[in-house]
Length: 325
Image (cartoon, rainbow, N blue to C red; front, side, top):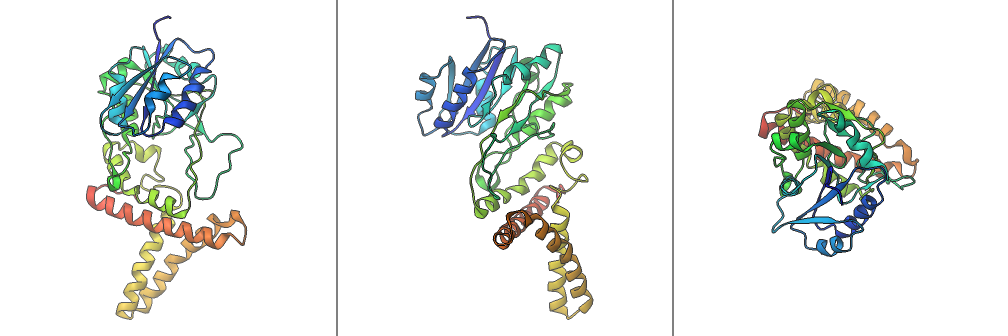
């Protein structure tokens, strides 16, 4: 077997079933240079080792005794990597057959951070509150579901640094910092449109969506660590999505309405009502697609998520002194 040109790094925690699908997809790669796969088991409670033993391709398993997060898991895999290039994906992903060949081809021309598209599987049924990961164009978030770089560059920047863990939950933003560390070190961003990875849809209701949006405040720490995100991800350099100006204006409107009620100021009440109007119009437009019967419930779920997200961002701004609205 020839020495590997590429090391595919996969962190995994409690996702043995997903990992089996990924390893099968890696076994079906076509046109790729010689590659090795390193799976970093981040303290899983299911039997990742059993999946590795029956994988259709050779896999090196690195085990962390306790869960430390995806940054530490990837660093553990990088410590045993031997390929000239390193490709990153996740256990729940399904790379298309030509993924690896297309992803690493730009690296033969020199230093680079290579991104490829992330899409939902064709024909997937996506509910209004389901979680999806999609990257149709280059992203300033550098999602490691589909990313590659030269191993020498990865080593030079020190690998991954741990990201914030909002509410004590899953680490986030470690891939954002990693990508920008590489770019700052002189590796330009290159888009590989044929290096496609499919990411599954995670079903959830409005409560699950709201819990996810409660983590938004951690984005303030990410922006403080990577100010480049302001010009590449945030709307107008401060807003976390196109819906956010309306949400913030509505929050100000609620404050004015409360002030008007407390002080008896009609002016404050009128200004508060005026500030709420654009949000109400925007909410109606955002919830319109499900039809008239489902629209009220959908709008209520969006409203709950907007409120949670607004509160989380406000708390994040206060904690970090970094403004993200």
